Length: 96
Image 1 (tube, rainbow, N blue to C red):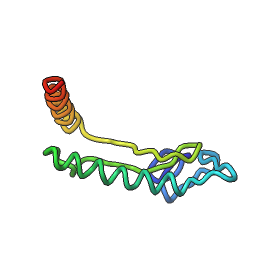
Image 2 (cartoon, rainbow, N blue to C red; image 1 turned 135 degrees about the vertical axis):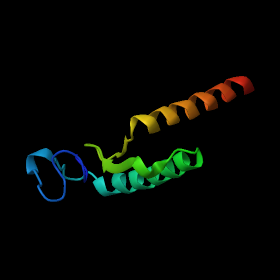
Image 3 (cartoon, rainbow, N blue to C red; image 1 turned 180 degrees about the horizontal axis):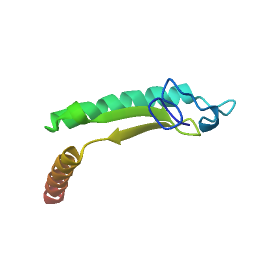
Image 4 (cartoon, one colour; image 1 turned 90 degrees about the vertical axis):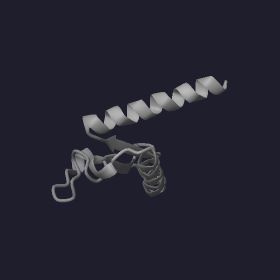
């Protein structure tokens, strides 16, 4: 399933063939879960010192209704996240 902002669904030009709905699948629950997860991720990135102004976090639901978070960021922000992740991983290894 495509979410708002994804190809096939941008709010103005809905392409019905790009969106598949299956009867009985709770897409809304998955989207709500993804919305909360996206907010948590955004907060964590900000806490890690990443400038979140250029970061896009999009909540969506997969074909089976599971929540999906799509992350889009600049190359500079991606490098900063990579540095933070490597530093954290190194600390975890030192503890073990």
